[in-house]
Amino acid sequence: MKAKTHSSEYYRQMLATQDHAIKRLNGHAKIMLFARSQEIPINSEQAAHGYYVISGAVRRSAIRSDGRRQILDLMLPGDFFFVVKGHHDLTVEAIAEDTALASYPGQLVEQLAQRDAHFARELRDLAFQTLSRMQDQLLIIGGITAIEKVSSFLLALASRSAGAKSQVVLPLTRYDIAEYLAVSVETVCRSFTSLQQRGAIRLAGKRTVRIINRDVLEESSDHAGVQ
Amino acid sequence: MKAKTHSSEYYRQMLATQDHAIKRLNGHAKIMLFARSQEIPINSEQAAHGYYVISGAVRRSAIRSDGRRQILDLMLPGDFFFVVKGHHDLTVEAIAEDTALASYPGQLVEQLAQRDAHFARELRDLAFQTLSRMQDQLLIIGGITAIEKVSSFLLALASRSAGAKSQVVLPLTRYDIAEYLAVSVETVCRSFTSLQQRGAIRLAGKRTVRIINRDVLEESSDHAGVQ
DNA sequence: CGGGTTATTGACGTCCCTCAACAATGGTGG
DNA sequence: CCACCATTGTTGAGGGACGTCAATAACCCG
Image (cartoon, rainbow over all chains, first blue to last red; front, side):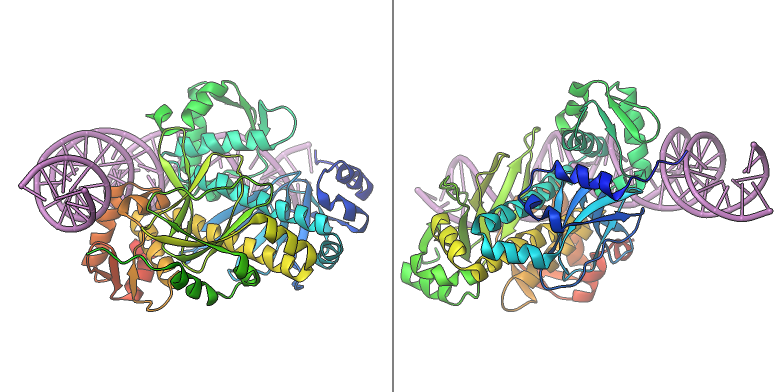
């Protein structure tokens, strides 16, 4: 049974619930649907193109010289992000099937920012969102053990995803998680099973994590807890 | 023999050589000197306070729940950075003795940004600088082996530091490097000696690294090279 | 000179990456 | 609908890399 693709109107209604400064441009925003692994266009204008994640997930990643891929940022529903023609060769692509984005042409954003100084300021705050996300990721990756990383990752995901905090639906594969945490896929799997054996989480299906004991999970997320 | 502390006028001349959009506010900028490990004030206004590094080095770091410290960003001469009253408890402090900063009051920056849309745009680009730095760091930390991390770190430092690229003066201790790369201090040391044995670098004193063979160093900076 | 910080090297144990095999899943076409 | 195949997920064995503990050296500054 395949998930039904929603109408453009459906996504536009979801978009209306957002609370960003950008919402003032919603009238001019285009709703775009992406398949898994499909690249988000950069539209190489001068101005930085803006996107808002309605549903699904998006990753920004870079390829190392040795071929490995490192996910640099992970955008979830409710997140806003810019796409600039970076000096590095990094790609931005949809992770989940049927990822819905609202697209704000850089031209329009730039114009409004020039007219409205208050809007320009909120735009800057939006950029700090990205910075904050990357800081969190840096702290997660900087962990010593793999269980530490996976635990922090799950907690971060739980706090970012809307609704019930005790159940997290992973929008990414184990491979994506591995590339995000800079560990091998096998280690990610072993960490999951280990956390399950400790009674911290329970896997309901491959992609759904129920947080059984948050204390144990938080304890595992720092090095003292793992010992 | 202690390095002579320069006059405020000396630093102001160095500041005049900068090429940022912020230079228009140089007249209102204050020159501030910091000792090693001295914290940079946040001035908790609403507006984000701006700093330009004239000489020395600054680190932004966070303390983990297990007590370890992670350096989240490293600012070198020529870099511009903002200090916002972060939701996380992170500290910003000088690394090197006699670190000289130009301080741009958030109030003034905000005002000019409101008057001049072009300036506001350049301000946004300045924020992307920070983003770019953190992306580089994420790629470095995401490396597998320690030698990989140290090699990338040295190369990044060499490309960021002005002047002769074949000689890098480390503004930070081994401990700082360890906290930046998220590895132990001992491993940092071993990586240095290992790179020296391979003929990639040569340690001239504890804090000066001469890059003997850049090819070997670049080869060590990806995993294929380390094998 | 003396004490505190910084830097280096060794021994040891553990964690994780690699290779490998296999299971489970999902989509496609007959 | 089922067979097939690619993708995704899981578990085991083995070896190398790194963290920890420890001792010592080098350095800085009073």
